[in-house]
Image (cartoon, rainbow, N blue to C red):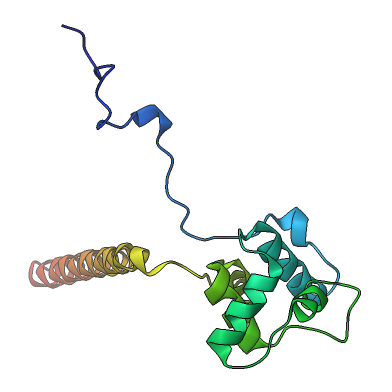
Length: 163
């Protein structure tokens, strides 16, 4: 009998091929490194549109339906163009773009500017666990410090009685 995974066992994963899940989705920085925030946003829109399986016409149609207002392919082209400084995507249309494409990376650009992350809800329990663990460790540290203070006070009291 051989050790390890059976060649025909398709249900057991290969531990050596395991990769941790992506917790924060980001653009490749080299693809959106731009001089201005407006240009970064245009680069993000462009990357999102390029990587989506849907064509721009279909994305525009779905955004229009979701928003209840007209969004055209030409508008998307303008939002994705760094040269079209007079056509920056509005926030509600950016949200619609994210809704249609499923790509949350444009939100990450803004969040990182303020020291935050856009994280999938499925990771919230782990984040909460980490916060509770951190709090528990802080409480243990404080408890240990208080124990040391009490022991020190007791030594001082005992040494005062022995004189």
